[in-house]
Image (cartoon, rainbow, N blue to C red; front, side, top):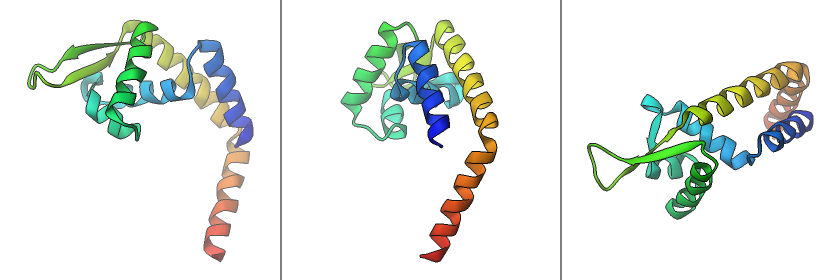
Length: 121
């Protein structure tokens, strides 16, 4: 697990984003129609609304996301990936998948050990 997390941090550092920013990009990418309400993003990220706004501010400054008023609820703001954000998230997700597959035996062993520990308690 530590090997995967270390390789993840290296990849994110090379891309110039934090793990929290990467997680937010994944949440946005997985949203219906590739757009998510700011409140929903905060909920998915388990953070306060104002913290999500600050996170989106940083992602927007980096050119990774944009925001627009919701067409159905003018009080809501929708956040979506920019074309550059799509390129970044696709490349990072591909690299993470390769790293996970390379570490699959170790990850599986770690999960098996955790399951065994949980069953003995």
